[in-house]
Length: 399
Ligand SMILES: *[C@@H]1O[C@H](CO)[C@@H](O)[C@H](O)[C@H]1NC(C)=O
Ligand SMILES: *[C@@H]1O[C@H](CO)[C@@H](O)[C@H](O)[C@H]1NC(C)=O
Ligand SMILES: *[C@@H]1O[C@H](CO)[C@@H](O)[C@H](O)[C@H]1NC(C)=O
Ligand SMILES: *[C@@H]1O[C@H](CO)[C@@H](O)[C@H](O)[C@H]1NC(C)=O
Image (cartoon, rainbow, N blue to C red; front, side):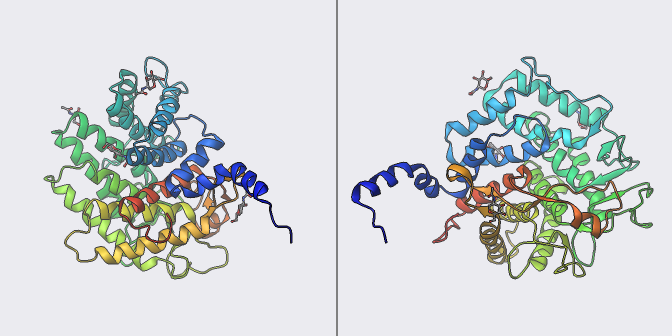
């Protein structure tokens, strides 16, 4: 066996220093730095916006200027000096995905008071509230003209935290707006929540015309993990801003708690994660698997709910802390790969998309490819990591 001389050892140490430093970092910053090093295209699209949200949490938590600067630089390059989006979409392309970037813009506007950001924010808010199409009951269509009368859980995450943040910052007394935000959630609740399992189907069609629409509820047939993930993140994102004295606060909190209970029951005993297609009859089937983005979103949602006191008075905080911690530890083991170049981390196991464009069946969801380094998986993992650190849950295991 070849033993290194002291000099070789010294050189090795010197040359591997970035790796040593990387391994000393908590996963939140290590994963963030890995993505920044590999390069994140500066877009306004919801996939990047979901990663930006994680980076925002790191910027808040560490107070290190480089993370704020990264977001500020990325976002300013998506806008013209007068606050218009450089890749402006057509006025008839009204999809909720366009709104997601609004949350990052609100964060940057609050920090900079820049009129450039304010213009973009006002544009998004005014398009949403005056141009976007609604169902007869007042629910936002997920995407017009493509998906008429359909609401998907995804859309609540895309638009409602922004709508709530905007209302809280600029029109806090606007009861009509708070009622409107509440309405979006109550429509989804009444059509998509399965009373028996407590889980929510991916979406519904109020006109019941979609091939997948249930004849009574209009709901799509299956429970898709990432839809639960988007939904729990929408709930905690809106509850951050929602006025406690409004009757909706308790309703939103109640819906969050019901979902938390379902997630506790559905958590996979072995991995601590959740299955791509959830529900008794699908768990453990050959094509089905533990999916990383939905697992990260659910973990973050539970941890964020704990921090924001949503479990207060239930006597079950410890129980849910246990659920979240098991999920987090399993996720690190399964989905955080230390095989990136230059000591970076890769994020594994995220299903590329999930849409109600087809028939929304098991074969469809399980047939979508799984990809590496998805921004919609890594962003929520970073969010969950920051929550683990904030709650001092890392213990002897690193996080
Ligand atoms: C970062 O801090 C701002 C200001 O306190 C807050 O509104 C925002 O929600 C925080 N971001 C995250 C991701 O927690
Ligand atoms: C944010 O970016 C803009 C445009 O690049 C720059 O002018 C401004 O100084 C930055 N703000 C901060 C607080 O760094
Ligand atoms: C209140 O919010 C509603 C719905 O977003 C909007 O139509 C209305 O213009 C707002 N009113 C005020 C006074 O800002
Ligand atoms: C990193 O390792 C994981 C398994 O942990 C593997 O799935 C993935 O393909 C690897 N990625 C690269 C870039 O080597």
